[in-house]
Image 1 (cartoon, helix red, strand yellow):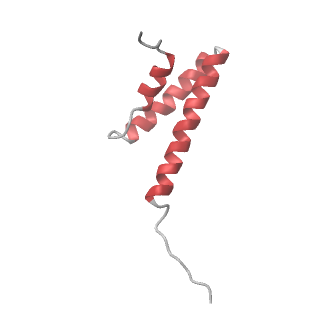
Image 2 (cartoon, rainbow, N blue to C red):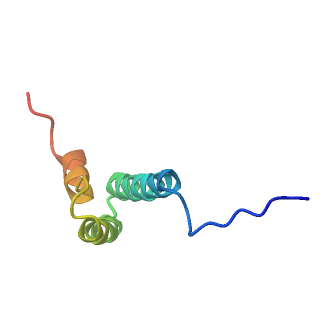
Image 3 (cartoon, rainbow, N blue to C red):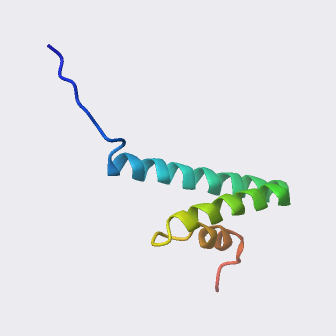
Length: 75
């Protein structure tokens, strides 16, 4: 007889993987928009990043990561 496993939802590892995938998707969209010169696309990615930052105040700031992508490297 098969066992039935009950769960309250995704595990912490699954949630971390989902969050990483969402963050990577926003970064990819931002970079694609920047390469095309699509300022509206960049703003949309920044808006999503701000929403993620607001929902995870103790985590790494995605807006800072996006800003670092467009800043010239320090010599």
